[in-house]
Length: 348
Image (cartoon, rainbow, N blue to C red; front, side):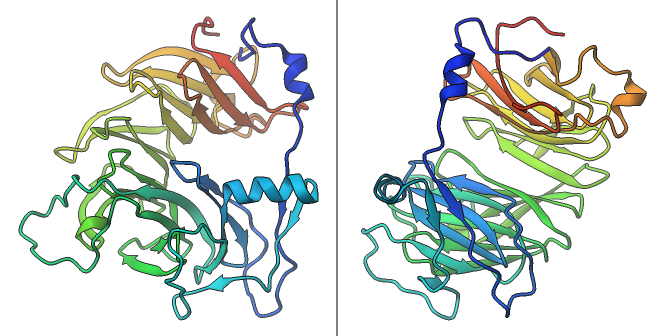
């Protein structure tokens, strides 16, 4: 069963304090969508924080500035609805080097967010195109938003300007992930049962459609070297894809319910998947074998119980930056539903 490793003092964790709280604004009367707050993301360099406030809007906050505000004004930082609201009709292109707070109107309910940064030496994979609408420099920072209507909108983080509108999915875009190599290759996972690969350095050209899921695709994640992609979804699905050839490597079997989250370890040696079956599996992605199993219910439920409404659905999973621990979030009826586990603990 998942637990803290011996070297972690749980009393110290209990003493950890909230450094701040961002509150969404009151509901504007002209908005049709509710106050959903489904997703947040940090930029790879930690410079910006993005969160969907509900009402179809995303707030971009310079993180260092936000921390200073917490220190000056206390833990609560109430969003000013009359602040900088930037949409595709009103974009400010000035002061690119100065971090600014933006509120962007995405036009529909936001389901997913992802930051992407560019490395100039990583060229577009489309070698026959001599002209591009956008030339992304080394300091470029982009935000991708996946929407309820199947669209993906790409924004310039520094200006709040809408750059690209990617239209091909027919259902909700449930997750987005950029290749970590700076190529600005974006993969989207959708309820239309597909993953789509986009080349933002080729003006958002859709390169490939990855098919294999028989139901909704919930989440996807790149390996650290960008060579492999994991996608998970309904009907117990876990797929591994070769991102050089855009072919399926293998399907991983073992979960007993929908699989909703996945994450590679920082060295790419391990893959974690989280499922509604109450379990987190640690896989060797190169062999497809389950290396370790952690559960939010002990003793482990039978496959029939795990495949139903078991009150312990695991919602999310993430490796720590050193790769030694995994954090999982579940519908536990306990005070602390987030548990950190050592890679060296014995399986349940």
